[in-house]
Image (cartoon, rainbow, N blue to C red; front, side):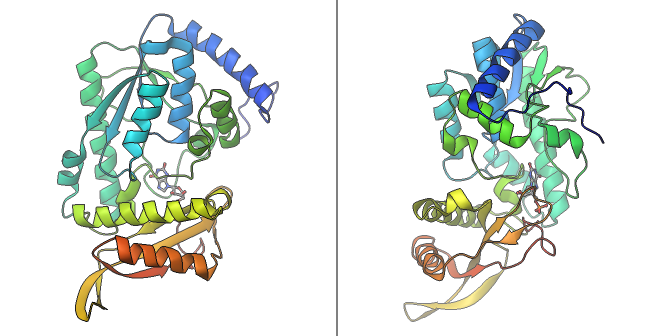
Length: 325
Ligand code: XMP
């Protein structure tokens, strides 16, 4: 597919151009939306966050953000979304706690594609239910970005709010759909979003679900969440978070024998993955210095109970994908 952008579109490579884009986008959004309401699924990811911030600037409280907590988010992620959007930006935000609902549907399901499909379908169901409760809303905003349009088909089932049931008919609002990721980030910064939010590492729609390898349990999900929080904290401390493209932990549904306080243990292991990539189609492994790896290992073994081993995944893509599922 060729370039669909207007040939006159000026690439956004500084804050001045980002501000010019924002002025123009706000004008267009006001014209398109008028006094109607717009619904948006706010995950906290870069694209939906920037889309939300842009719409808040254009239409304020007429943007209704729905944040679904599916229980597969990182530590404190939902709290962060509420803090930034509701408290700081004054968004009209509905928080939906769907944790038990998602985990019930996923119980005992080990096949990766089936897990993804359940998470995707459940997300649509929960979002549709909220949308129906809200009554007549004309528009649906989506954080579609230009690469999404160019590569609409991936190897794995991807997850967004496309595919809503027939009775929910919306006109789409996609204010950043002609922007590349780096341009979306600049627009986010120009809108006043924090650097940590705008330069977040990629995070898959099915969240920690694809890192809790095999059938998801609350127990193992907690091991993924806690070890991931430690990894992110340590990477931030030593500056690796600014350097490494994507880093996270994985906990497969497999236990091994260990020893602790002179007693035999039979516990899960945590895998650390840290990769660099440009567009996620290929990836290389970051060479983390051993002293940093050992520090992370010690913290995980001491602070995350139920884990007796820590491994480092040295597999590039190909042959491994970035995520394990
Ligand atoms: P893989 O594992 O295929 O991942 O090498 C490539 C990149 O895509 C992210 N990823 C997803 N992102 N929805 C998303 O929005 C998804 O379902 C999904 N699955 C994988 C992954 O984290 C990596 O950055």
